[in-house]
Image (cartoon, rainbow, N blue to C red; front, side):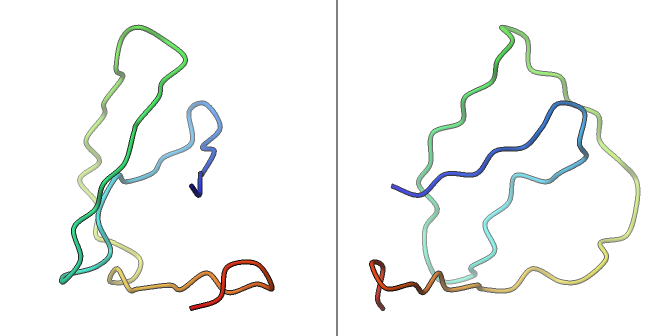
Length: 59
């Protein structure tokens, strides 16, 4: 179990950066209503796979 915290009102995308692996996740919001604002902007960079490597989580 890894997790990510996105502070309120910070623009972000909920996407799968892998074109090969299936993304399985649980999304938890602090409010009962999902606030979605689709931004019509070009991505800064294409999604890429990032591996988490530390002494506990070896590949």
